[in-house]
Length: 214
Image (tube, rainbow, N blue to C red; front, side):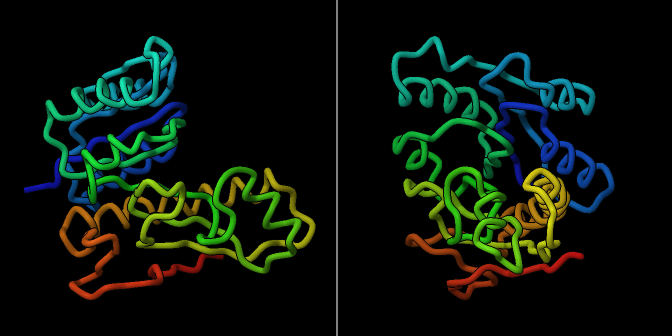
């Protein structure tokens, strides 16, 4: 049976669309059970509705703190009993309570070759450092921001003279390929989170699988 998956978004949902397309093409064996947003105007909710995926929205501004909002989100998600939670442009820092509640089931994608450049402005930081390679990394979510065990990374060569916006566009195209692939590894049970580390095909891994793109 396909892995029940919840996708959390805050904006346009381009990574969500990559999941929708991969499932529709038969390339990804996930059941997209719900798409949740903290913003009612998120275009990703329209993408989900067009694909026939149930949606839910709770605005975070009506809650007094992060954990109370996260508990409300968890109640929505628990109703569909997700086996996997995919953060696809969900612009909220998760509370420790939420991370523990769904431990080992949350994936995030970060636009850098972690552990390089956690946080913001990753593309400009890579350009400023003169890096030869840049890309994106899928990892399990832990309480450490952008610090969870890495599963899969996609990299491409930095083009001399390109802008941060141009680099971002190229990295996003990589994300649309590696994020569904990584989620598929987790959904099939090949990649798991155990005792604070990632295992791939039963073997502990300290480095992600790396895909290179033109």
